[in-house]
Length: 112
Image 1 (spheres, helix red, strand yellow):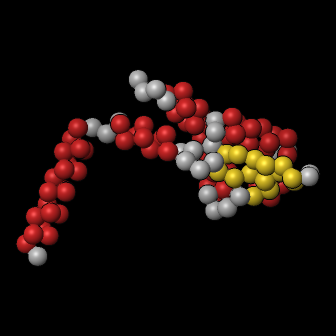
Image 2 (spheres, rainbow, N blue to C red; image 1 turned 45 degrees about the vertical axis):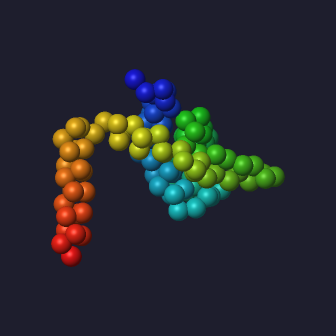
Protein backbone atom coordinates (compact mmCIF):
# COMPACT_ATOMS: atom_id res chain seq x y z
CA UNK A 1 0.00 0.00 0.00
CA UNK A 2 1.38 3.42 -0.91
CA UNK A 3 2.13 5.89 1.87
CA UNK A 4 -0.14 8.42 0.23
CA UNK A 5 -3.23 6.15 0.14
CA UNK A 6 -5.28 8.47 2.37
CA UNK A 7 -4.56 11.38 0.04
CA UNK A 8 -5.57 9.33 -3.01
CA UNK A 9 -8.77 8.25 -1.27
CA UNK A 10 -9.66 11.82 -0.33
CA UNK A 11 -9.09 13.16 -3.85
CA UNK A 12 -11.04 10.32 -5.45
CA UNK A 13 -13.96 10.82 -3.04
CA UNK A 14 -13.94 14.54 -3.77
CA UNK A 15 -13.93 13.97 -7.52
CA UNK A 16 -16.63 11.28 -7.39
CA UNK A 17 -19.35 13.94 -7.64
CA UNK A 18 -20.12 15.46 -11.07
CA UNK A 19 -20.62 18.94 -9.59
CA UNK A 20 -17.18 18.88 -8.00
CA UNK A 21 -15.57 17.57 -11.18
CA UNK A 22 -17.22 20.42 -13.11
CA UNK A 23 -15.82 22.90 -10.59
CA UNK A 24 -12.32 21.47 -11.04
CA UNK A 25 -12.69 21.66 -14.83
CA UNK A 26 -13.75 25.30 -14.56
CA UNK A 27 -10.93 26.18 -12.16
CA UNK A 28 -8.42 24.60 -14.54
CA UNK A 29 -9.07 27.63 -16.75
CA UNK A 30 -8.53 30.25 -14.05
CA UNK A 31 -9.38 31.10 -10.44
CA UNK A 32 -12.93 32.35 -9.83
CA UNK A 33 -15.07 33.89 -7.13
CA UNK A 34 -17.56 31.59 -5.44
CA UNK A 35 -20.66 33.36 -6.77
CA UNK A 36 -19.34 33.07 -10.34
CA UNK A 37 -18.56 29.38 -9.87
CA UNK A 38 -22.01 28.68 -8.44
CA UNK A 39 -23.99 30.32 -11.26
CA UNK A 40 -24.35 27.33 -13.61
CA UNK A 41 -25.43 24.90 -10.87
CA UNK A 42 -29.10 24.42 -9.93
CA UNK A 43 -28.59 24.53 -6.17
CA UNK A 44 -28.53 26.99 -3.33
CA UNK A 45 -25.30 28.80 -2.54
CA UNK A 46 -24.91 27.03 0.84
CA UNK A 47 -25.19 23.65 -0.90
CA UNK A 48 -22.62 24.70 -3.46
CA UNK A 49 -20.27 25.93 -0.73
CA UNK A 50 -20.45 22.45 0.84
CA UNK A 51 -19.07 21.04 -2.42
CA UNK A 52 -16.23 23.55 -2.28
CA UNK A 53 -15.55 22.52 1.32
CA UNK A 54 -15.16 18.89 0.28
CA UNK A 55 -12.74 19.86 -2.48
CA UNK A 56 -10.78 22.07 -0.09
CA UNK A 57 -10.65 19.39 2.63
CA UNK A 58 -9.26 16.96 0.03
CA UNK A 59 -6.57 19.49 -0.89
CA UNK A 60 -7.80 19.92 -4.46
CA UNK A 61 -8.62 23.62 -4.19
CA UNK A 62 -7.60 26.58 -2.06
CA UNK A 63 -9.59 29.68 -1.29
CA UNK A 64 -8.69 33.19 -0.30
CA UNK A 65 -11.02 35.76 1.18
CA UNK A 66 -10.55 39.46 0.52
CA UNK A 67 -13.25 41.51 2.17
CA UNK A 68 -16.55 39.83 1.31
CA UNK A 69 -15.25 38.08 -1.80
CA UNK A 70 -13.88 34.54 -1.69
CA UNK A 71 -11.71 33.49 -4.63
CA UNK A 72 -11.14 29.81 -5.32
CA UNK A 73 -8.32 28.22 -7.32
CA UNK A 74 -6.86 24.79 -7.93
CA UNK A 75 -4.04 23.89 -5.60
CA UNK A 76 -0.93 23.42 -7.76
CA UNK A 77 -0.01 19.74 -7.94
CA UNK A 78 -3.19 18.63 -6.19
CA UNK A 79 -3.94 15.93 -8.75
CA UNK A 80 -0.36 14.70 -9.05
CA UNK A 81 -1.05 12.04 -6.43
CA UNK A 82 -3.63 10.49 -8.77
CA UNK A 83 -1.18 10.42 -11.65
CA UNK A 84 1.39 8.75 -9.43
CA UNK A 85 -1.12 6.18 -8.18
CA UNK A 86 -2.42 5.43 -11.68
CA UNK A 87 1.13 5.01 -12.93
CA UNK A 88 1.74 2.39 -10.27
CA UNK A 89 -1.35 0.47 -11.40
CA UNK A 90 -0.09 -0.09 -14.92
CA UNK A 91 0.42 -3.72 -15.78
CA UNK A 92 3.79 -5.25 -16.59
CA UNK A 93 2.59 -5.75 -20.18
CA UNK A 94 2.05 -1.99 -20.53
CA UNK A 95 5.58 -1.38 -19.26
CA UNK A 96 6.94 -3.88 -21.79
CA UNK A 97 4.99 -2.18 -24.57
CA UNK A 98 6.44 1.17 -23.50
CA UNK A 99 9.96 -0.23 -23.63
CA UNK A 100 9.28 -1.74 -27.05
CA UNK A 101 8.00 1.63 -28.29
CA UNK A 102 11.16 3.35 -27.05
CA UNK A 103 13.33 0.69 -28.69
CA UNK A 104 11.50 1.03 -32.02
CA UNK A 105 11.74 4.83 -31.90
CA UNK A 106 15.49 4.64 -31.32
CA UNK A 107 15.91 2.09 -34.12
CA UNK A 108 13.98 4.36 -36.49
CA UNK A 109 16.18 7.32 -35.53
CA UNK A 110 19.33 5.32 -36.23
CA UNK A 111 18.02 4.34 -39.68
CA UNK A 112 17.34 7.97 -40.56
